Length: 272
Image (tube, rainbow, N blue to C red; front, side, top):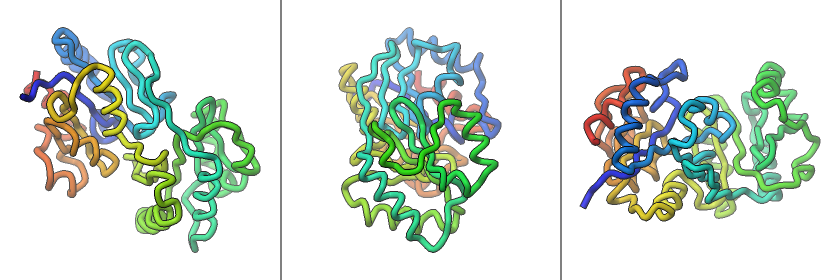
């Protein structure tokens, strides 16, 4: 029997509008209703924790988080119940794929570590504007000569190619890594590589088990991109965004409006 107790939403082009904002008063009202029913709102994003938390600062302690496409799972009370990283040697393999392709990425790969992000100095030179932007966005960004200098698991590797070259990189990375990593889209124009079998559905399953819920009975989920595919497939009530990927729109019911018109919040309004 379906009883929605968890509502999970992607961020970029789903919960957030094109200006990266959301309707806070509307969300406050929806969240209060959900919490009053002992429900949980889950931010399920390809973004890392450091870029999600500032967006929801005024809602601290009221939302659960599946970050880095499932590599990190945190409960509303701040408990980390999953943190899974790639081995550094497999990150080196990823960069070998990058270096052997006949075209360069648009800008350098970011390696999201448990304590800080990293970027290769050689990759940083590809796009100096992006390097400066990343250094400003991540004040603790460390520039390194080799991935061997990273002494901690890597939660996620993020790299961006031109749209017409992205699939070639994804195919090459999947072929080379095989079962040593999961290659997916980031949800906002890049490619993310995380640990094997890690995705948003996996992260949500960890969260559901923690609370005693079942995804196929208690989860409603919203997504727009292919990194949301596993999450939508696992949900009792999946919704694809009107502005989302055509593959998802063919498979799932649509949210009642697009991301620029509070589509997620309007749809939740009909569920609780």
